[in-house]
Length: 377
Ligand SMILES: Nc1ncnc2c1ncn2[C@@H]1O[C@H](COP(=O)(O)OP(=O)(O)O)[C@@H](O)[C@H]1O
Ligand SMILES: N[C@@H](CCC(=O)OP(=O)(O)O)C(=O)O
Image (cartoon, rainbow, N blue to C red; front, side, top):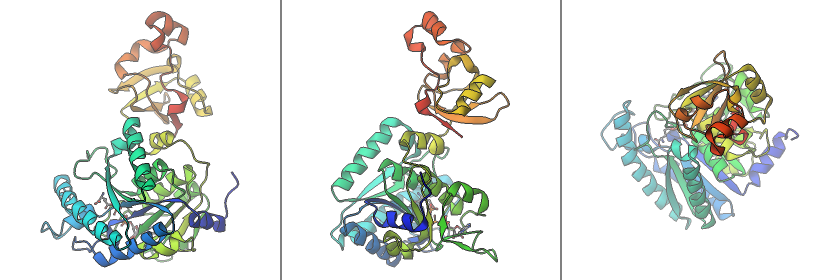
């Protein structure tokens, strides 16, 4: 695909039919841990304007923890998980109540979707989320999505909503992703550093990941900082989705394709959602160590991983779980979804397809990882 120009990326955002907008905690709340209704209403007015002009809008909204810790009597965002989850439980209700009132000024309904990392990993949950979101959008509703913080398992939760928003953009097959935060654009280094310069357009986000200096959040209410926002822009780009990053006050102009903030060009045609979540969202539960020949075949692309080239299996996982594929030196070369439970694999190792069929039957004559379920890293 020819590299799109800055102007073309802005135009495709202006013409986008389905748009995922992600807003960070600091753009909706006060440092004291309460909602800031003026900020929220201003954002809603910009989104409502796009919605009333026909765009399908999904809002990925952070802010549950940040809106909940003040009402619960805490002076700052608590650090322990259980208290954060309690704050999220209280704050999420307050957030939705406010969105409901604010969108109703424009006759627009909102619907709450609380999602976990598992919902983006497991095919059945993924398709369930996709069906519900599609139907809400067909009905003209603005889905308000957040991570299910009150129940999310800390080991696999996203923690920030940036990467979640890029996955949601893929799930709803969005035409644009808008990341709204407390800084007007991406800078060459954290804006507090002297000499950092604003970046208007990122033609190749993979290069930017190496060149731009980024830091975590300093707002006291947010979490991911610029690191996870760049990751989200990367995930969108490899899904063929252009992105723009700017401050919440610029939401209106950003949606209209005006040259505010930083625009990110897509770098590929739209890929499969399954590959995107394998690469960026899945948490491998085991490892298959492969020999040199299999490593070469996998690295060359579009090859399935056959038992004949696998030397060792590590970890305890079930068929369908994400796993690493490592070379003999221990380097990760790919991620994939295992075709078999880990306990079934040892007896299959080193055997070719004909032997597997003869010894164990037809159901064992399949690749350990099918190429459609395998992504290079
Ligand atoms: N290179 C950079 N360019 C812009 N902002 C950066 C950069 N590196 C770090 N940041 C910081 O990232 C912060 C935004 O992240 P965060 O606080 O997590 O926001 P949100 O709550 O909106 O997700 C900004 O306030 C900024 O200080
Ligand atoms: N899901 C969490 C988001 C956590 C968070 O701080 O995210 P962000 O402000 O986007 O960096 C919440 O609603 O509080």
